[in-house]
Length: 341
Ligand code: UD1
Image (cartoon, rainbow, N blue to C red; front, side, top):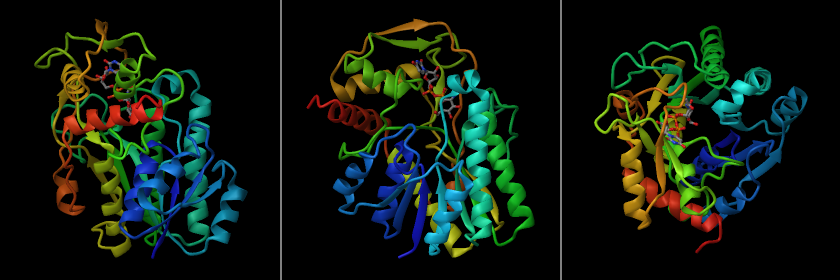
């Protein structure tokens, strides 16, 4: 049973990926500094899989403790790196903190992995690197645009660090996964997204509004050049996303990559507008969602959705879950997490 390190494994996408890994027979070990997640997610993983993953609270900015970790766990075969700060608005306010944390952690990780000869890395990247796309669907070879936030820039620079490392070290095999818009939660309702403070992203804002924590949802702009005027995104169920990480890992472990550094889009290939997401939520929850149309949010792009051909062909993976399954599971999780059931 290959042992896999998941950094940031108590977070939203990390915890779902830990479940998928365990289900596919991998041994998961998590490190996380718990700055934006809760240790209770381990209970959720255990409730779903029957296995409690190993966990150590480590801040990856501390190179010595990371080295010590790899020294003690010499049998780690690969790393999936989720640990990062991810709030776009906050990154604009605190650029130094974002660059220091996101770049520092990745630099320490890559250095430690090379020191301890761990040669397989999967990096949690974002479709934000494409900026405002010139054409749709977005393909992996489409240009990476200047980032619209320090957060987005850290994703681009991390990709560059990994790609430059892979170029000179052929023993180093890496894959960057560019996520479109992950939403939803595990169908059990035992794990999900629980942002601290006011959510920045659409889905948690919707579920918190439905839960009565927020008064109403603000829909940012209805004058986009889209069918109903609201912005279009490629929403992907987090369980499908998690499964893609296992497929990427399978590919790295078999060393059947064409190149020792590859990039894949992870989306469904379908675009949905903000109003379509609201409609789906109202249908699956049976609730009426209070919302108001307001001005566009600065930095938002009009429409994005992925070409999934590369991931379909090379990872042998395809997103399977519908938008209704995404909104249903998000609400199911929110209710459980707020003890509303
Ligand atoms: C955002 C980030 C992106 C990041 C991703 C995942 C920006 C510009 N981009 O993507 O870099 O990788 O989250 O964390 O912030 N919306 C509303 N009302 C709300 C919230 C959102 O109408 O209260 C709309 C947005 O305008 C957008 C859509 O919902 O059209 C999705 O927004 P969001 O969930 O924040 O994701 P992105 O902006 O696509």
